[in-house]
Image (tube, rainbow, N blue to C red):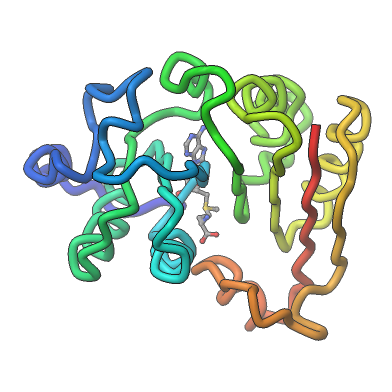
Length: 210
Ligand code: SAM
């Protein structure tokens, strides 16, 4: 997702320091960033945030962390969290490559990946958020018997992800090759999901565990 550069982005995010961690102040102590001690779910590549803010409204007994690398995109989700007054969402400006520097081992109860960038060229495969290097991070930060949930419209990325997860030894718990054909009530459409669904793309979804 490319958004126009906003020179004031960092100032804006830093002025919301009760909600957004711009400078890794909560690295290794993310639980202190929340008012309540409750299970922790993270979304990597939050984008504009419809997914995480809807999920957080529906599940006030879960704490959510949105991880986003792009400060300009982060503004949009921050505005949503402020408008909705959500106490159980915190946002971290971070490259997913640094997840293990930021979180403690066995601290997270679920990882969500939605419409991750496909990086179609083979030489960029390591940047895909379902590459084995990332799976290794998720495995370390997740508690035992927990889930990675991944949704995309990109068939190539989905196939790559199934192979990557399978090769890594992950177990496929649930799989849907056309989520919108009979859309579950629990499905929350992300911004990208809405856009690509309108173009007639199928939406693929998997829940897998380590
Ligand atoms: N999840 C949103 C959705 O479904 O509408 C956004 C999808 S968009 C294609 C991918 C998002 O992941 C972008 O906002 C991008 O900045 C973010 N992203 C890509 N690589 C990342 C990384 N290494 N660490 C954190 N965020 C990343």
